[in-house]
Amino acid sequence: MKQGLRVVAFAIAPLVLPAGPATAQPAASPPPTPLQRLEASLVRITRSSNASWGIYVKCLETGEEVALDADRQMDTMSTIKIPLMVEAFEQIKAGRFKLADIYTLQKDDLLPGTGILRSLDPGAVISVKDLITLMIIVSDNTATDVMYRMVGGPQAVTRRMEALGLKSTRATGTARAWFDALRAEGNRDEFHRQAKHPYGLSTPREMGVLLERMERGTLVDKASSELMLQILRGQLYRTRIPRFLSGWAVPHKTGDFLPYIADDVGVLEAPERKVVLSVFTANHYGAGDALEEAIGRLAEQVAAYFAYRQ
Image (cartoon, rainbow, N blue to C red; front, side, top):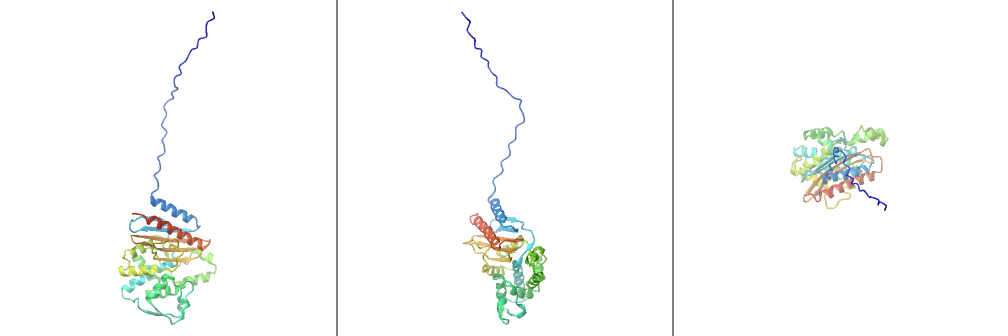
C-alpha cells in the first residue's frame, strides 16, 4: 500500500518592522475670520484693475479695520478740499470771517476743470457757505482758490493738519498752480508719471481719521462737524463709493485725474452703523469707468459686511 502524501502546514508569523519616528501631521490652519474674508475680497477687487491702491476701512461701532497700503502718501486730487473745508470752519469759529459773508466773483478767479462758477459772469455774488458747498459737491476749482485766499493759502491748511497730528497730509498748492503745471507739460501721461505736481498729498488712513473725527463731532466742534457732513452728503458725483449702494447715506468727496487717479473718501451711514471708507488710486492707464466701478465694488463689499455685524 502506498504511503499517502502528507500536508504540512506552516504558521507564518506577522512581519514586525523596527519602530521608526512618527510622521508629524501638519497642524490645520484656522479658518479665516470674517474680517479676513472681507480683506481678501477687497484684495481680489483691486487686482481686477491695474493700478496702485491705498484703502482704509474702519467701523466706528465695532472698531474693526482693514488697511491695505493705508499709510502710503498719495495724490489726493480734489479730496484735499476736505482739509481746506476744515481750515475754513476753524477760521470761521475763530471769527476771521463768517459763512454769511459775501464774495463777488472776479474775472481772474475763473478756472477750468470741474465746477460751475467758471460758467458765471464776473460780478456774481456768492456767500462763503455757497463757496464751500460748491467746492465740495461739484468740486468747483474756482471756489477752491477763492477759499485758499480767504484762509491764507495752502500753507495754512498744511499747518492745521500738522496740528491735528496728520503729518502726511499737505496742501501742496492752489488749483491754478496745478493747471498751470499741467499746461506747461502738455503730455498728460508724462505729467502723471513724473508725479512732480500733486494736487495735494495724504494717506487713506489720515483722510479716514478726519472723517471719523467729523462723525464723532470732534472736528472743529460738534456744530461745524455736522454742517461739514451735511455738505458732504450733497455730493453730486456718485459713480464710485455710492455706485452700488442702497440704504446708506454717503457723505463723501471725490478726487480725480482720470484715467490715472480716481479717489473717493467718505462714510457709509446707517441708523446704527457708520463705516469710514477711504480709497486712493494712481498709475491707472485703462478705462476710467473700470476704475470707478472697482471702487464701487469695494464699497459694496464693505457695506454688505458691516450691515449685519453686531
